[in-house]
Length: 389
Image (cartoon, rainbow, N blue to C red; front, side, top):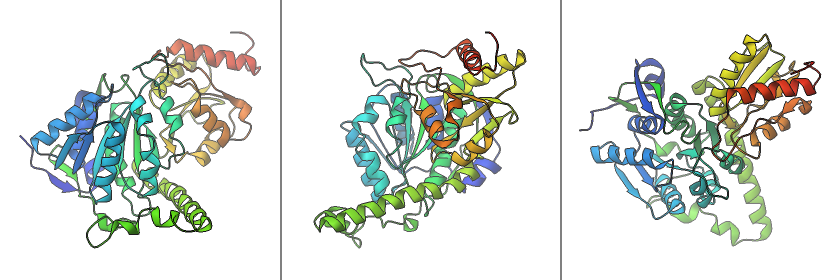
């Protein structure tokens, strides 16, 4: 039976209301977030390890928490249908994983280009041959330039909070961009964790489509006004100029999201032991492993700190420069083969020879704490900061 819910502001829901501790999986955390998000429509297509979360969202629909829900023909169809629902002024939600992300890839820049505040959860998994359903976040590197805001959750608590806070950020009139909340599949989705939840009888205030910078589709606003075809039917000059200026606006909107992300996330990154001369820098599940490595290294007397990056787009460039200004070595563990986070860090800071782009594990491999500790010591040895391992 559906719980009668009261609509409140995101500040009241997430910051002022009391919380109760529960022991749930990351997939269940997604459903708990959607239950409180006042979502009008969710559309799903199954793909491991995302499937369970959207099954649970379907249960919410059956109980009356959502106005509409159905299974699409495939991932591309889902993202296109979600786009249509958002264009019509609805608050929507969906999720996908790995190959599903790639199959739907065309729609993500379309979401951004049409300035739709869609929130999508990505439960990252392997996409390469031989096929793997195991944890790996290489798909994040493929989405960096789609125009969406990208948040990387460390655990189920982050996952829950970032989905709800995602709506608060994405729906700001000056932002109004799609927002992806990413986790490393299985490590978060299929393991239980302690999560603090606000009361289930509270939900976000409804989305107001009249605040959108792009008018919602309706009988008084013919679609021809806000689709691209009229521009493409004009001269090349007009087409190029319109496309370039609109791309600039999408990028500017992501920059305008910074102050809202700072407000709701408490900053785009977190720093432990800011005076350290050596930092482990990570995002997602690698942060949790980095924390354990940090304990082990400090127990051995090494002055090591940790930087957790929460927002990948927009990237916390200024904050990272300030946090690493005096650091001699930056070690970046990642759950992917390409090392996209290390590349982002190298592009952001001066003296990027300080960056050690390892350890990197992929294909579902775990990242033992000992591996991070070993890589830190080898990097110190190579830099002349340690005489022997």
